[in-house]
Image (cartoon, rainbow, N blue to C red; front, side, top):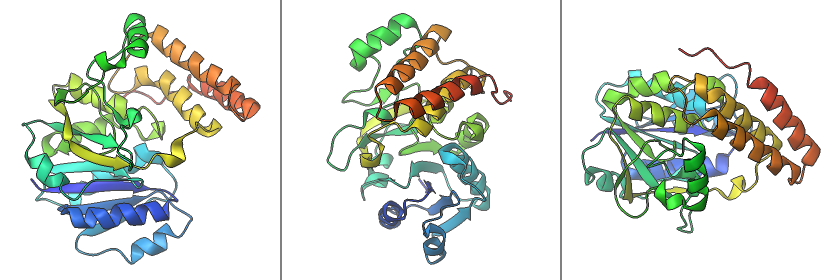
Length: 289
């Protein structure tokens, strides 16, 4: 297996240093860094890192994780002799034996890593769905008993992915590109794309031995800006290429939950403002391709 790593970064130079240094040691076939127009010196540092292994693509503006991964996948045309691509952000990294563990997994089109914090705790936000909570009943059941909808301690076929340590076979990369809509920017892009791959017949496995680390220490709270993207994207999902993921009732409940979260946030009025703007922006969805 010849795996190319695509790492998206934006204004987190210290984290990128760690991620890239480890990625170099893992043994990736190539490493593509997508710099989302960072302003913290990342660009200057990356100029010193380019060599036969590392390629840098600098964006003219911040396109978010969605736009960054889309640009990174487009850059794969520069190479001919690769079999898989692994996607992750600058705050994530694999253990040094990740490629060895990958080679030991059952045959699949897409591999989802078991994402942990640096302290070894499960990253719930990066767990893919083994069953989609796509109806009101399933959503309530998921809240009460999430284990019925998430992988646990054994290799599990899943219906979505997380863009932290996901590894996609070359034959499915073109379909993944079609499913990525850069306008989403951040949030739910990986869920939508993963569901789209699953619906097209991709065999996707979550593998507990395939560890990946994700430093989520800076993501503990949902900022007003991030609340905007999460709310807006919930409304946009039905118009994405993957199609509707859950019912309109579930979308309403999730948006309502984000509204309640805004009421109890530290920046109440700003959070409510961004939530309301997002609800209005939900009617301005990009055209489905």
